[in-house]
Image 1 (cartoon, helix red, strand yellow):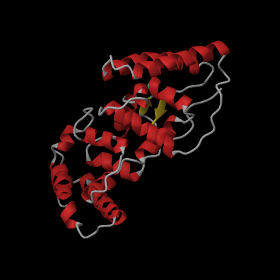
Image 2 (cartoon, helix red, strand yellow):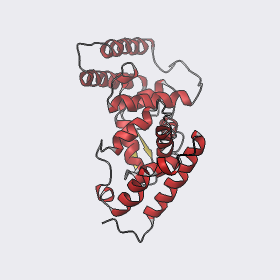
Image 3 (cartoon, helix red, strand yellow):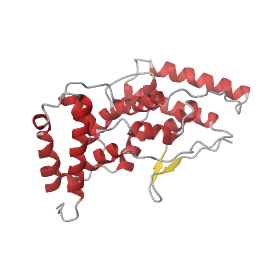
Length: 256
């Protein structure tokens, strides 16, 4: 029996501060990005949040390095043949331009459910992980299927994705015009712009958010203009964002 879940959620400080500053709870963000993983987008590309989330997890898989690929010996010959037939259907559906991207996602989702039913037989697959003692994160079928086929634990993938979300690095790269391809951060920016409706609206309308984060952020480029090295700029932005986070978290600030 294989237990998919073996590790724990390890939240990097940069990621935690980034979420706090834009009014998003860490487990809410993790749940949202998992919900947007789409097996169809492993093979196709568009500009949707589904594509960003899927590509973020694919990048996370690559960042984790080499892994030992083992044959699915728990499957019978008949099950393996059925599995391969469904995989071919997935590939055929994802490249079929007669369907819109939403239609492809929905059709592949149905196929992924069938694939998981076959692949997970005989395996101890957990459908939830715990962010803390009380907070659960639910793993959908498409995400579970990726974890099994790619031989990664869900938490390994989540931990790798979180390492790619840093508002300090994003702002430093943007201000120095050294942007990089980062689908995890792209998804985060969409959330910051209101996608998913998981931000704390009371906090976003509060004085601390506007005066300590938004106003200060506008001065970053001019205040640190003479620091042209990327690592120096990231360090300075990180330190200042940490200070802002601490200021906002002070209990004497009223978030009304």
